[in-house]
Length: 440
Image (cartoon, rainbow, N blue to C red; front, side):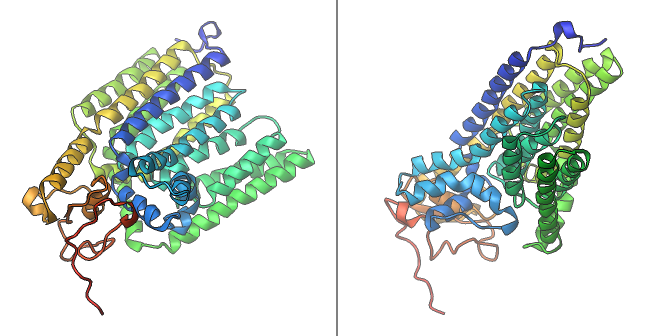
């Protein structure tokens, strides 16, 4: 059974229209999450408070600086412009998180205009890999997952790049220099791709241009290796290795990669059974995961390792598809579209546990006064050390209580909740119950 017969293939215009529609679905799911403050999950509330207090980028890790610039510039600009309304500032925070998604899709749509079917691999990556990190939706590794695709699409074009394409690729590779430590893998891939283009091409502009692009890619490898060998936090490096195994428990990557692999195998071997499995397997995985109201934060956090494991595999399959003469058929387009829409709906479904946590947390803030021991409320917490931060960002400018962390006596605290406050310039009612800071 050859589902790629020319008679039922989609037109380039139809493919692009479908891709735009699917990206709209993905974006809608993302913004539904923003309406529930998903950008405040895990470290997000800390990032938000830092930017509001310092009116600059978080500067948490030099190896991820460019990801911070790409995702935080709208909020930094708003703060520096004098915006003080917290609801408006949250929108700017969300716009910053969304910006790399738009940038990646727009540039990828341009880069794949001659082979428009390739854009669906980016969309699958967004839905299955990016959405899997719901509690790190602002995370730097997600920016890496997004930015690599247009670079890759430009790199595998089977013709000379135009001056504009070379310029855009160079800008993207400059951004790629400091996105996330696992840029090591994509950096190696891009180094080989553009070095090969430089070696193969006789045209001086293409040869030297590709050489420069290969040099930028190699520089990202050097930077990544440096920060891997000399990390800012040795403990994080150890946790990263363990997270590779933990990420296997997340259903979204399995849904996306099973769809791609089974469809690819079904086409190569002309197997109707494999093509049928490409429908059934994602449906079964999604159906089982639908029973859960949420994905555990630890499992979601572990999916940052997908930049090292699943992403290269997905890009390899994309490359092989680009070398073939296969066309996107209606059947395959429907299969992939249903997976993308299904993952978007699953993402919204699995936010229910976060929404329930937020509602309970805000109810406690309204009921209590002063410092609140979480032990009095079922040891409520989300990330171990962010309760005081969430107490400020969810106080709606009226800080009447601060919920402490469970281990507030001897655990990590980004600031002293007993003597210090955050977002002071944005509060209509400041906490009157803070203690005097002891002089050292």
